[in-house]
Image (tube, rainbow, N blue to C red; front, side, top):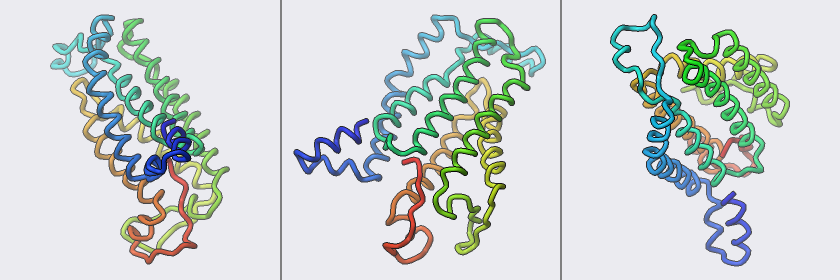
Length: 244
């Protein structure tokens, strides 16, 4: 949204043209998300505690977890709030990959909300049954994979690039769809397995998210991509569409 606004203002004042640069918007988006989390965090936690939105402990879990009953849960709403707001403010909303990213994030967040609703409101420590959770995750993952496959315009978008091998790539063809599916659904379940009452998932999420953000930046910058690949800059070199 701010990218569009500054683009309009650049017609009157050239200084606003600086917001077209990916590096500046990446930095501002991170700072915006951090500011929202710091400012809204205490209020969100107080509201969750005030609404009695607290963790329900599974009786099958470790006995040490029983002492943590009543810990405020649904903290993911703060993550979604800061991340989605920052994306809407600074990302290029005309990019279909941005819209896909927002859609997948919101839909997976909705699955998580239903799970927490059953735990908190209905007092069901199991939450959303695993088969239904996996069903909706799979449906979203397959839809995203099909979208990416159908909208691929260059060969590199459906190739598998092997790390540490500069000139090695594998044309996946239709195998691109199950790969994307397993990445999306597998990542979601990996976070669930890592997470716990002590917020065990957040540090791994920060590290993985930071690495993927760096990849997106390098792939989306026409100057950074050839340098990162160890190749000379060529105007004819294709730039992979990214969510930037």
